[in-house]
Image 1: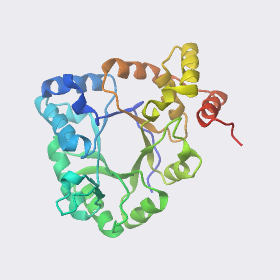
Image 2: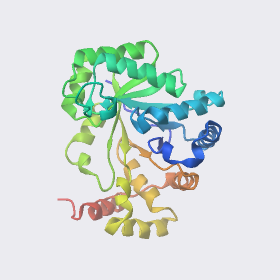
Image 3: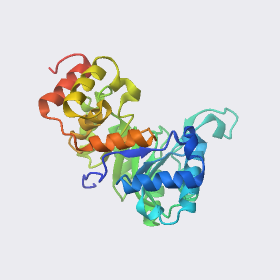
Image 4: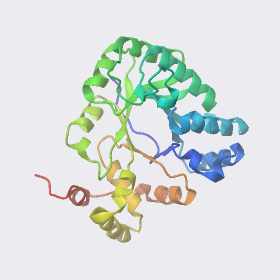
Length: 291
């Protein structure tokens, strides 16, 4: 079992929207953007092979190749396991999951080539696969770690029994778990998922930490706006502070690539909520007080 630790960054930068940022399509421009983020102390970049049908990883790698030295300063997370209909080579053309050793090994090698890095810091299985042969999948992940291709393996969106079946077959610990968590998607705090994640020593990463914008609208949005005025912070920054207050300090994965937005969230990273304020936000988000 791994020892639970924390990420030394207030949030990770999600690359899922990279192709939608016109100003970052040239490798040199993206290299400038990456270097600016590193200079701000933000060095975790979150990818997946399905983001832009692999083009997000390719563009990121092109940027690293035109700016030697950046790769050694950053940390990369990427994921595999989702096969889109366009990538299904068989007759159905259907979206499905693939956790087979052949798929995992090929995905790791391909991601290393696209990203232009010597090692993927955290390599995650993107979705639980009911067909997963845990011993074979475990062997592929362990061998990738042994070979230095990945620093650590992890999972995304798994339930406890699925990741525990995989972990039981591995020699190395599953160190990271990325799953949906926010003020407006707080069920993992009450259904046992979050406790299982940190109890098993996995570092939590929260995708959609602003609930796709739901945290910034309606009653919870208004409450965050009021609190933000009092704290001289942004509503989004306080929503992320709500997450970071949890044991295990989950690392939010933000989707914005706008420099102004990133700078604001970075300025808000030192915000600390007291217990009553944290519960007041939770009550508003859930629409009822705790039992």
